[in-house]
Length: 441
Image 1 (cartoon, rainbow, N blue to C red):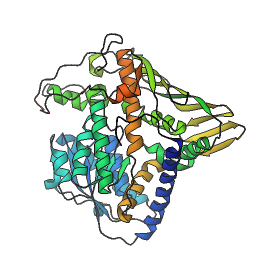
Image 2 (tube, helix red, strand yellow):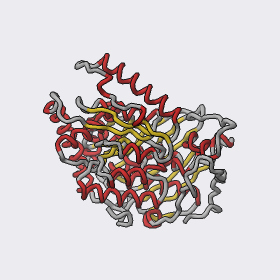
Image 3 (spheres, helix red, strand yellow):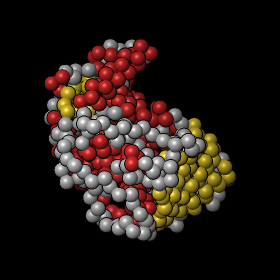
Image 4 (cartoon, rainbow, N blue to C red):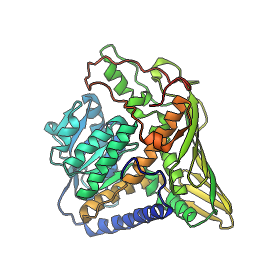
């Protein structure tokens, strides 16, 4: 896919994508039975040790009976040690509860010599004889890690989002085009795409005209506060920012990208297209202290789509505030409400759908490993790239205070990368964006 192409994806392509996920899930179920007796071992490399990464690695190891973690890497040794131990503990607990019990130790062949630390750990993991890599570092690193993995012929699970700026998006698009040529699977961590009984069924109902022509969507991802690590005297600027990566746009993309991307992806799925224009507002009201970096704690964004539909998207991370995660879809013949995988449709064609997020987390890995077994690659790149771009689009509009087009966003030259990846480097503390004064580039 060329990142500079027109914004709109056809409804037919979206329906095809929906059907492909359903078909892939059916294949995963079949392949699980077909390969129950085993086969060649699938060798997994895990890059980026944290809470979500531990969950993704666990789900990867449970997705096939003959699969092992053979290499792991992180920038920090303490994080690697802590989360590798947590992963082993998780495997023991799940083995004890499994209907078909397994030896949790059989899932690991990851001796100290294949545990790598540092900025180049990703290359060492990928070069350690793995078949598939689980990429769960802070999002800034996804484009480069994905590029190297595909260059080395590896299948990939890429946690969301997949970039934090325009150059990163264009890099990922080029890499995914190369992956298609090499027939490599790229599976995205946008897990709602694999919630077939809830979100997927709702999307299909909408594509089939379940509420008529969609005119507007209201989507909210409102949460409280998240973790923070107090600075130690021994930490350099680089180490401090990386350990608190959520709060620095160059690492996370801001929470409109890092967390809210799930909502934006669902909206694009419902509508069958990507926005042509957006404007946004945001700022810092409750997380104003320096330990929260320079990101905003709230955004309110209007996305305008080629069909004429609009999405009003709200996201917030403010301690002590009430949570809400839902979508309200308004059409000419009915309305639909989505709430954590459960959906209800009212109007001329009423319906109800009940999904399960935990299954979705596991399914995406089941599909990936089944695709490797069968030699039929899965390609989630279209939506993982464009839904990530929607978040970047909204952030740039909010930071600058400008009304932006999709073309402008896709062609943005703003590169958030540091000058060098050096743990001893002194980094400037980024200024908080001031809408109307911060320049779009």
